[in-house]
Length: 145
Image (cartoon, rainbow, N blue to C red; front, side, top):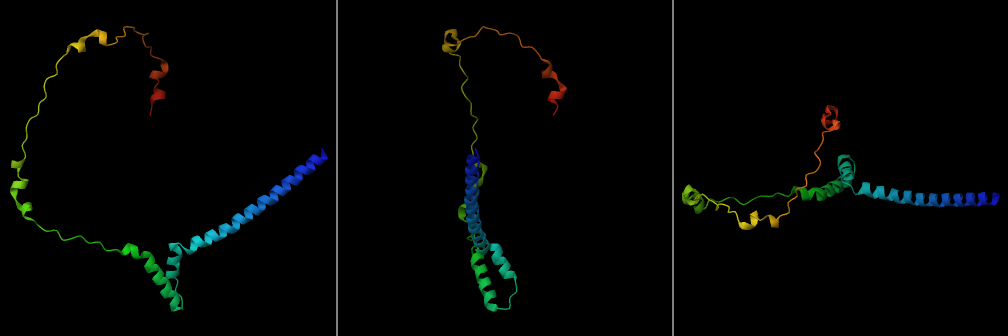
């Protein structure tokens, strides 16, 4: 029994060591992930542009990086000038004369022989038990909203 407990303790210790190594490797790779995320985010570029440095080359590099990043947002879109064409000024295109309203009417429905033939339809003459009103159906407490 004592040997069994010692074996279980050894297995638990080795599992703890393995889990520790796995967690450390995730932590190390996560640090690199966060570093890459911060370096390539627009927040970093904005912070660099806002910080005043004495070195002009750093300032110029930050500004050019910002300009290339946001240059896609500065696209100026213009439409062609609208031109008035001849057909737009003719009243015949827009007058009421082009529209003709006709009253549409449908033929009256007719009763056909198959519609009144009881052999074609299944008629259920069985009347079930009458429905009863239960107390919960009329309870004000249940149906208040």
